[in-house]
Image (cartoon, rainbow, N blue to C red; front, top):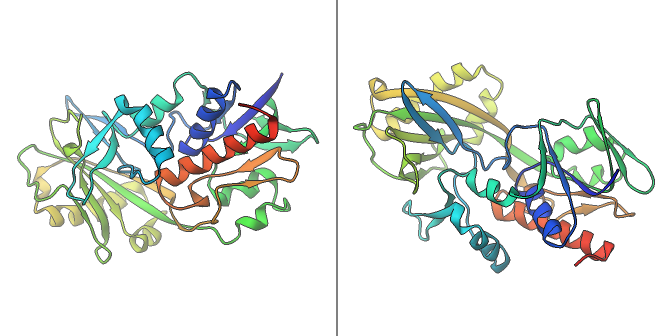
Length: 317
């Protein structure tokens, strides 16, 4: 069976593209190697003793600037709410976790998880997609993987790969920590350009959270993340936990849980400068937040623009 469109990656770019195509009457298939949708719009859920806690350990919130993205977010308003963290304007967060918004977007779309694509072959009229023992064929293929991973799939000699040469990222190490309910809570969020913890958020302050403990998420600076990216996660947690405790005035005795997640391609530092790339025959599209910048809205804009181009070229609605 030849699929209309296969999208590789179930982050916001892939889901935005799939949602627009599905709304127009197409039947896109989304393949993702992970076990959840949303990419960096992620929520980690763990049990500490007999208590369930959660952490938004990737994107902390969504900012909305353009009318098109505002309409998109409003469409899924049941899965999100405003978070007043001290910024000039409220930020939008998923409820009860950041992953709730991408799950709502994915509802009704054919998303197949746990499928890692290992090879692609251009057939002349589309693409064959190999994923372990599984094989798929598509008239059009959309790749929404991080820019450095594109060459591994399409080949270093593909003409579009050279266009990605200047796209760059910073990694990010994320600490998730749960404290006793009476631990200090001196602020909701804090950003610093000079401290080793560049972002600290009282995650349990977000609307819809039912944590019995006080939970915090801290993103390390680019320098700290780059220096320790490949260390053992337990070592990273031991390194970052005292920094968080010092920042919020909490004792290590108050800590009930701590773990780390490493994001190798976290923050786009040099973007492509356009919403997507497309092959001359319009069978291959490349997109992601790396096209326009390190924001959820940028990822959505890329995916929506790809879908609109596919519909224009293919004569869809």
